[in-house]
Image (cartoon, rainbow, N blue to C red; front, side):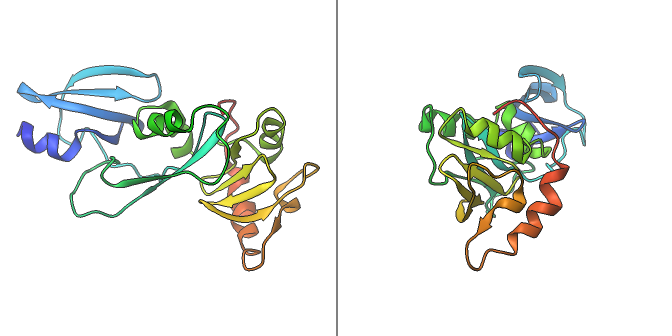
Length: 201
């Protein structure tokens, strides 16, 4: 039983009462240790069937270290209920990391950082907020699960450069998309406005 539970859940990110938690492992008598990403605390609890649910929200862009990392699911044969290093990919767009690029990636790959919670629940800075942040550092800032702004004036869709913006830009309508990518403005207009503003970048 314990071995089966570890195979399904250990070292993966799942939902517990709609809160993202990282399952550290199962032990004798179905005791489970997990790490709550929201309050950054480990807990030990008696496991109950159906206690952990698979994430229903994708991760997408994670704002971290004054830059961004794009996280997406990678279909694999080995089954895990939650997100894990086995079924996720971590891509770094061509932007600067004002701090340490390797450390930022390792932090996200730990699947324990609170920035992942913001991404899962769509909590991103608005376009004006992101522009304000980019005046203070030379990295990047995501405004949506799929879109990020680089300090150099570049717009990324996932990890692909798709357009540019000027320092005077006030909204997503001021983005100039490159040829063949003009349709992406519809995605931005329909989604990014719904984000919940945050201060963590």
